[in-house]
Length: 371
Image 1: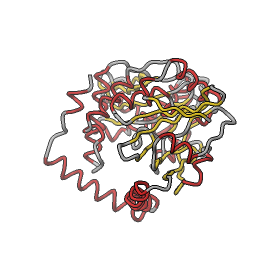
Image 2 (image 1 turned 45 degrees about the vertical axis):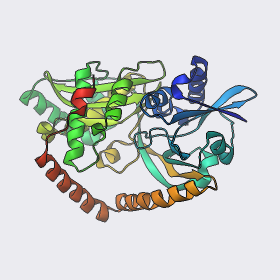
Image 3 (image 1 turned 180 degrees about the vertical axis):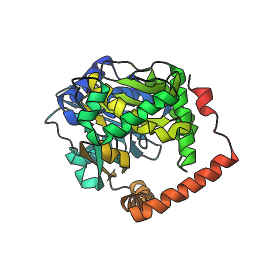
Image 4 (image 1 turned 90 degrees about the horizontal axis):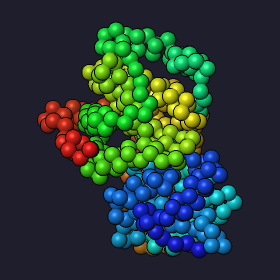
């Protein structure tokens, strides 16, 4: 096995075609977070972004996107943002994890959404977690008919709230692929406010994430597209979602809504409308991402399994990094896995968020940088 290392933006058109071919040949690698376009996007803003290309007989057969720092600490590319991670390869290809880490110059490689089929990394997985998905297919009629057939339990309540929203605010309409960049900025402002309100880390306070999302919004390729969907009441945006899609998979990434209209359940409306429209546009799977949320339990048709852990070589940097990161991850996973711990933690975060938002307005990077 020959392994060469490249910057994502330096991949030739032929290598990108080989990468897409590997995705097409294995359904488990069809997720847009595994596409070269996502790696290239990260590489525009993260200096340590790399791609290992595996070759057999001179032919490219595998691709591992990752990030590396000066000490040899590696992470799955976009760790903290990506909901799917893997070495994308053609069927039947095998590799040795230690040889791979050595070729990449990595003492350790951290992942938290590794697809289940990555057997060479299996011995390094410290925990497995469910990742809900929706198997979607086009309906015979319009949205109401699809909703009643697919989610009969939610259909009556959701359609009733949509009718009330139409009467109170304006006619409800949905745009699956909205190309107005102003709506993307609106979504990021809403999401930024939500992060602060709930005490979470505000991703959109980081300029590089704002720039990454803006870049991916403008990517319109055959195998990868940034999809912005918006629910309107009249001319007023009510809710929005942005996520990448491949040929067959749409990743649910950033969803937010106008908090003034929360009593209409616009977030749930957004997810349902997006799933139905995605099916009509060729998507067969909507990936909701790892995490326990009530709406995911309502919407999912099944669950995938993703792993987190650390693939490491015998090295002092690897030992030190693992000693630092594993307790943090263990504490977080313990809290998330137990409702009796998770609910008080959520309440504490919301209290912090209330104090934070009462002291300062929403920050400006989203308005200034997303163009």
